Image (cartoon, rainbow, N blue to C red; front, side, top):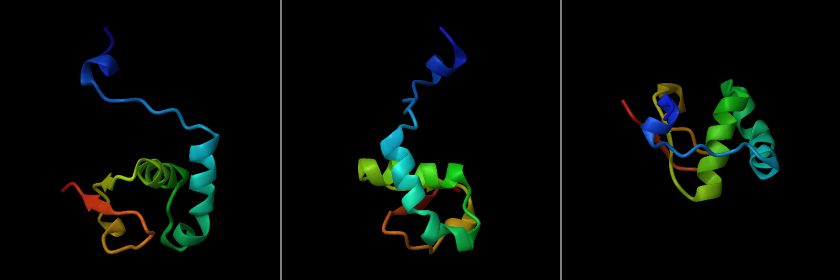
Length: 72
């Protein structure tokens, strides 16, 4: 068993639906310096209807229509 499998985390492919959602977030996030990875995180949260988790305090208070929760 690999180290990744031991974490029991779900690995979600970045598919065309995720890519389209991430691309749609560019106008709202570009002024805040969000990376593709940041937008992919937000897109996954939006597609699942769950909050995006982050340790990046710069996300606090931003409104993209996706709940954001700081983890530290």
